[in-house]
Length: 332
Image 1 (tube, one colour):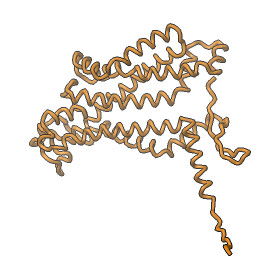
Image 2 (tube, one colour):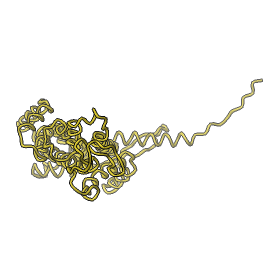
Image 3 (cartoon, helix red, strand yellow):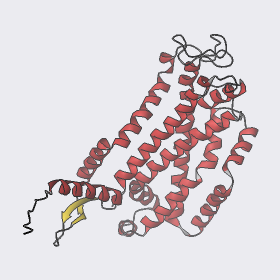
Image 4 (cartoon, one colour):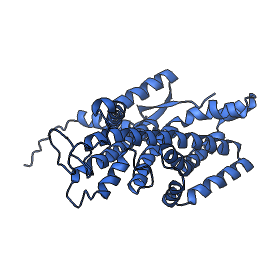
C-alpha cells in the first residue's frame, strides 16, 4: 500500500477562474507524464548532457589521451599549441592528458562518496524516523554530534592521519557527509509515518522493515535522488580542496592534484593560466550540471512548482487568445 500519486489538472472553477485540481491517475500514466516532463525540461537535459560528457571522458580516457599522464613530454610551462592542446605544466607534463585522466579519480570519489553517504543517511534517517522513541533519540544524538563538528577541520585531521589514497578520501568524506541526508530523511519519514497507508500496513500485520523499505522508501525517491546529487557535488568539491591542500596522494592524477601542482610550480606567478583553468573549469562545470539536474528534479516532483508552472502556461494561452476590440467614441 503506497501513498496515492496525484497529478495536477488545470480546471475552470464555477466563477470562471482557473485552478489547479488534483486528479487520480493510474501509476503508469503518472510515470509516463513524469518522464515526458523530464525530457521536456531544459535544465534537466542540459545537466544530464554535461554530466554524461564528463562520464564518457573518464571512461574513454585511455582512448582520448593514450599513454601515462605523468610522463614528461616537453619543456615546462609551454603555452597551448597544436601539439599540446592545453600546454604543459611546470614539470613538462601534458595538461590535456592530466585533465582527461583526472576526471576518472575525481568522478570516482564523487559518485562513490555520494552513494555511500546517501545509503547510510537513508538507513539511519528512516530507522530513526519510523521507530521513534529511544531509537530516534540515540540516532538523532549521534547525527547531531556529527553535524555540529566543523567539517573542514575534521576532514583535514582525518586526511592527515590516514594513509593517502582514493579509498581514504571516500571514507573521510563519507564520515562527515552522511549526517545531513539522514536528518532530512528522518524528518520526512516522521511525516509519512502518520499517513493512513502506514497505519493500514501495520494493522495488516506487515513487519517493520517491510513497511520501511517497501512502503515508505518509494515515497522518498525524489528526496533521496536530490540528496544523492547534492552529496556527489559536495564530494567532488571537498576532494578538490583536500588535494589542493596536499592532504591526499598527490602522485595520483585528479583535478585537485592538478591544481596542487599548478600552485607548487608557480603557475600563476609565471602567467601559465592554462595549468589552472582546465581542471578548475571541469570542477565548476560538473557542479553546475549536477545542480541543473537537481533543480529539474525539484520542478518535476514538487506538486506546488508543477501547479504554478502549469497555471502560468494556461494564463499565457488565455492571454494570447484575448484580442482587444477598438472602440470609436463620438466626442461631439
